Image (cartoon, rainbow, N blue to C red):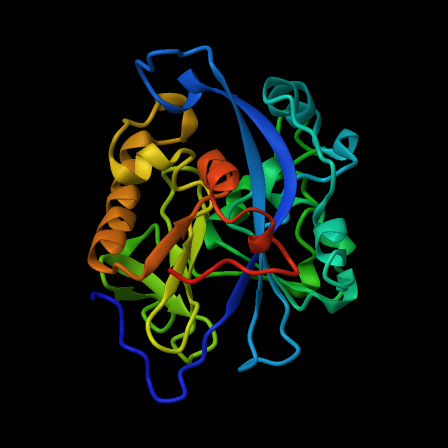
Length: 300
């Protein structure tokens, strides 16, 4: 295994899925030269809740999905992605956590994989949560919408008094080595709580600047989950069965580079499972309702 072995009394986390929307993705948007390029995939928008007896009182949410009041997105998002993907929200992140008895005030941490509309939800609904985002995200909001009417990113998305922008990794000569360290095949990982239980992974700018993933211990004896955000949109990208379409990432070459690290991680660690934000196969054929809060994702 390329990941560190558990220590005595090793801390770990329970991971619960949250259903936070649905998007309809044409196959050609994901896979080049697909046999049926016009076939539309009904894909979930998945967020995740992390809880640990080793960190009592911490309710950690990874991504917030789609907001119900989609009319409050920046105009380019409404006229572009919301329409193109026929987005719908039967329940938002607030309603998803309520299924297990949590309120927005109970959420202590929100980590956003990146700043695309179907992952950001509405952080203002969680007034006590500390927001963690990739450092390169900051440039997307300079100046942001509505100051820039063409911007896809709302300038008031991140509450300034409770948001941490992680140190950027885009400039190798100035990387904060106190934060980012290599972990297995991953070039940059940050041990958030200092106990080897939860790592933030810099996923590079391939999908979008500031894209981050999570690597989470899910048992005391060696199980892991990799929450990949949009590092891939289809399970066939993880297995290598299908190539990646140009339109699905800002820089496909860099996206494939990070995807190769995830693939190595999975191959080297048989007790690791990868969970993607839009994995329709896992949602349809996986664990069903048992994986969703107040249930939890089974360890590998």
